[in-house]
Amino acid sequence: MFSISKRSEVEPFHAMDVLAEATKRRAGGHPVISMAVGQPSHPAPRAALDAARTALAEGRIGYTDALGTARLKHALAWHYRDRHGLEIDPARIAVTTGSSAAFNLAFLSLFDAGDAVAIARPGYPAYRNILGALGLHVVEVPVTADTHFTLTPESLEAIQQEKGVKLKGVLLASPANPTGTVTGREGLKALAAYCDANDIAFISDEIYHGLTFAGEETTALELKGEAIVINSFSKYYCMTGWRIGWMVLPDRLVRPIERVAQSLYISPPELSQIAATAALGASEELDRVKASYAANRELLLDRLPKIGLAPASPMDGAFYAYVDVSRFTNDSMDFARRMLAEINVAATPGLDFDPVEGPRTLRMSYAGSEAEIAEAAERIGMWLK
Image 1 (cartoon, rainbow, N blue to C red):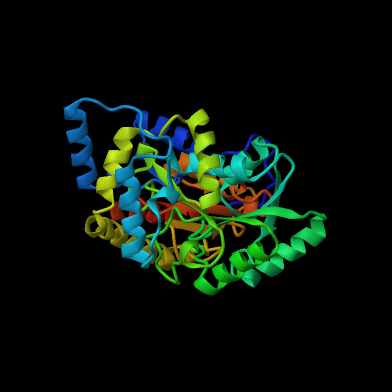
Image 2 (spheres, helix red, strand yellow):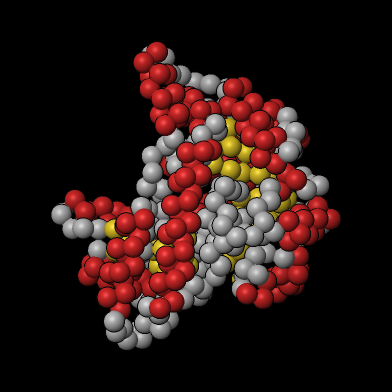
């Protein structure tokens, strides 16, 4: 049993720090199970690997157009037609070096230093860090059960009144990291309409699309307005290390984004683009991977409340359980350190995602194998007795 302790004053124990420590322990012979980072345990689809092998055998991998190959952009346009019934001009698609580059490009092209941009709290910490590094004013909006764990026009109005700011941008992820929230069509439609009516740039982070287990998965491209959509091959397509993502842009932003991309990145890696093009046709294989996540999700939904780790938000999408650890501690950093040191299970402290309520929460990724997730749940349950 854990005692309530004062919040740690040491340096925050972030997700990548947890991964580094877990890797170090594993190298030292410890039987580590990592639930710390949102990284699928499955490899890239077979078709993607085969395409990459063929490209390497042919020898020449070089620069491409700054916004990606025509072949990949046309394949992505086909993807939107097949999955969403949308006709997207391939010229509006920008291929990027992971979604991280897409966020950099969007922020640099849309905002000036000092502009206020709203994000959800809890939320993906890189949003806060990239925006802050670019000199933008980060406005964190609490999302709770009262707002269905997502941003709403009402919550945006309230935060502007409270902070005395005028928003220039809103960034929303659905499905969301770490909460697992899936913002349905009506909620997304209301948010997009509010942004359009108030001259606020709306950025829709859809990198966990394809990984919705409950609720209504909607792309902002289905709605009227000028949303900037960001997606990635990292999660559903199991291609984290390939560093390949994309954006769908309003026509007016294509050339500005291209100019910035040329200067910062030259082009996305060609080998990854070749593999990604092939991956778009691997839905049957990838849906089997998704089924394994669904099994892990069901196991944790059953097991975690029984051992005192009730979910702090929905687990409707992505592959995370965001749990309440306040029964055991109010210092999730210390909790995560001890869990890794004592039972070799790695998870991420909530402080990474929420500077206010985070000391009482922990994020666990269930993107690992079914055997690993079951073993991790068993170890944690025994440890907490």
